[in-house]
Image (cartoon, rainbow, N blue to C red; front, side, top):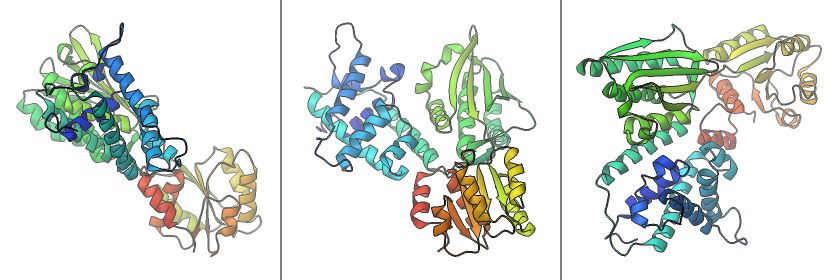
Length: 428
């Protein structure tokens, strides 16, 4: 690239931003690439459509030759661009499809975008330096901050978070700013709220970002915040905002709200602007409620069952218990658990019989089973379909990390990979 016209870093940033907004016409039409590349618009088309088509064609131009191995770096970069930006796979789905960790994803993504940027520059290098947008430096800083925060949200292990605690913390922090601006904050929320999944610090930052921006947009002297539960979601509405100052399209141009929207989407939620009456708007965001995972403990030893209950309930798992095969059948009639902890050395109908029964019945065969045993060889249990084998005595950290890993709750692809290759918690 010709650095006398543009810095390489800035052009790559423009390409990255355009890819992230490939399916968002409003945001894509503000891409600096439209000026930088000086695209020719087809008759009846738009600049945005031309840019979108150019990006798709350029990604396809990076497709490696068929004789190159599929596990090559070239195929990895091409497939990442295709899955993530053209086919709109989530980061998690892309990592699964490519069989890479989250940390590897960001390395592959950077390499892929740099390759795409080089191709675009070589094909469409302007004859003279195009005007650099006056807010280019600020735009790059905002984009970098947003991407760092969203990357952190992806890589941070998700935990169960009390939304009431998040709201209380955000309210306490924001009150001095509200008082300084002469705004009264009125929070209407139930005494208790269901838990959500995420990182408590980042979730609090979501609320702070929304409240900070809303204080500047409030129409009067009171900012109303209403929180409630709608179905399987927690819904938060911030109202009495000046509709002339905010719209769904303007979210991309408000750094705090753009950051909040990105973080909310990581956690499976959504942020939007709603105009309920002339001149007034609301900011509404929703987050899915976390249902506690249920663990069924099957063991004939009362003390062991109580110990597992203590460990699991301290980490917000719902626990059901059975002391025999007969009790197990009764518990299964109450609803299917998410995971079963099974002792194989039980009197009468032993754990091996129970394991065989559970794995042979289509109604229960998909339930992951963790064997908890004094036996030292896990091969038989694993061959029969057990997900993991833990050796008694089992410490709390080992039990919880294994249960979370088997349930896929770690929320961190790097952790899943490391735990898998290390064989955490397995009998040796």
